[in-house]
Length: 620
Figure (cartoon, rainbow, N blue to C red):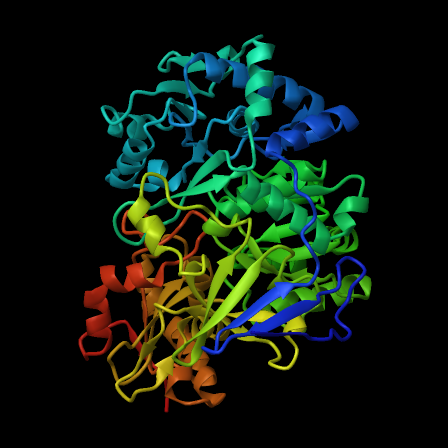
C-alpha cells in the first residue's frame, strides 16, 4: 500500500480543527482514510468526567428539566449529581446487579434517567435505555418482550408505572428484575426513586476503580426491520475515545465556559446519549432536557424551551429543522436570539434536504449578517457513534466529513458505489449474547461492516469530505439495468415535494420505473387543501390541490434531467402512518425503507398497476 497526504484548501473555521487526511490505496481497489492527527489519550471511563466536574465546578448546573412551559426548571448541579450517582450506585450493588445483570430503562429522558444511567456505569453495571416506542406506541409488545428476555435485567426503571402499565403487564414472566418507579406514587412498584440510596462508599469506590476501558457500559438496541433488534455492546473506551476525538475536531469545546445544549433526542439512541449527553458531561456543560419533540402538539414545548434557553450548539434531525424554520420565520425575537447566540447548527441522521439548508442560511444572513455554520457527522450505534465529522464549512447539505482522530475508514468498491467500513477504538466488540451476529459484522481485517456507501465531495481532495451515498442493501436496479441510488433520491424527493412530503420510500426494484411512497406531512396537506382539522385524511389527500402540488414536484424532479433513475413516474400518498411494531420507524422519526417495502408490498404492487385510486402520475 502506498500512503499519501492530500492538502487542505480554504475550509478552516475558527471553531474547528483543520482536516488533514492520509489516504492509502490497496491493490484490490479499496481506499483507507484516516486523520494524520493521533488520538489524544482518552479518559479511563465516563465516571471520571463526573468526578472531575463535581470537583472543578460543583455548583454548575449539569441537568435541567421541566414538564411544561409554565413550570420552573428542575436543576441538578455537578456536585449533587455526583452525590446522587454514588448513592444509587451503592444501592444497585447491594441488590446484586453486575456485569451480567444490567439495568433496563424504559422511559423518556429525565434527570432520574440520567442519574440511574450514570450510576450503573459508575460501578461497572451495563445500562440499557430502551426506546419508549416499544412501550408506549407498540400494540403487541413483542419486541419489548424479546429485549427484556435477552437482557435478563436486575432492575427495570419506568418514569411512571401508571403510564407504562400496559408495557409492564406485557413483560410479566419474562424477567426477575426489581421494578423502580420514578413517579411520586410508587405503590405499584418495588421501589421509588427516592429509596435508591446507600452509604456504602467503600464498595462504590472499589467498584469505580475497577471499571476499565473494556468494561461494558451500555447495551444499545438497533431498530431492526424484522425480528428482535440487536443489543450493541458499548464499552467505556468506545465512548471516551469518541469524546476525545470530538474535542480534537471541535477545539472550541476546550475553551468554552458555559457550554449549553437544549436537546430532545432520546437516550435510547446513540446520537442522543453517546454524542450529545456525553459531549455535555465530558466538557462540563449543561444539558437542558427538552420535553418536546418535532411532531404536531409536541413542538410547541420545544419552541417554548428554545425561547428560554438558547444553546451553544443546536442539535436536531431534518423534521425538527423543518418545523424550526417555520417558527423562525414567524418569531422575530426568537430568530434574532437563536442566530446571534448559537455557535453551530448540527443536523444528524438523514441528510438535511437542501431547501431547509438554504432556508436556514437565508434566515441567518438576513438576521445577523452572516451564516451560522451548519455541520453534520456520521456513524452508527456500533461506532459510539462518531466516525466521520464535518468540522469545516461545507458549501451544501449532506457532507458528513472526514475520519476523526483514531478512526480508519475503508472504502470498498461495490458495483458503482464505495461501501464504507470502520475500524478504531470507537467500534463495538460485538453484540450481546450473539457470537454469530458478531462474527458476521467484521471483515478479515477487523473493519466493521456497516452497510453504508460513501462518495467523495472532491475525488482529488479527501479533506473536503464524504457524502452519505445510501445503504448498499437499499439500492436496486430497474429492469433497464440502471442503478437507483435510494439514499440520494430520497433526500432530493423530500426537497422537491416540500412541504407535503414528511418522508419518502423509493420503489422500483425489478420494475421499469421509479415510484415514491409518500408519508405525508398531514398539517401541510391540510393547509394546501384548505381542509379543516375534522376532515378525514383520505379526503385531504384526495384534494385536487394536494395532488396537483405533488405532481408539480414530481415534474420538477424529472425536469432536472439525469435519466430514469433520478425521478419517479408515479407516487402514492400513504394514509397509514409508519408502524413501530412493523419496524418502519424509530422514535427519532427515521424511516426503514426495507421494512416499509416489505410490509406494504401490496401497495407497491398496486402502485405499478392501474387500480390504486390515490396514485399521482408525473406529467410528461
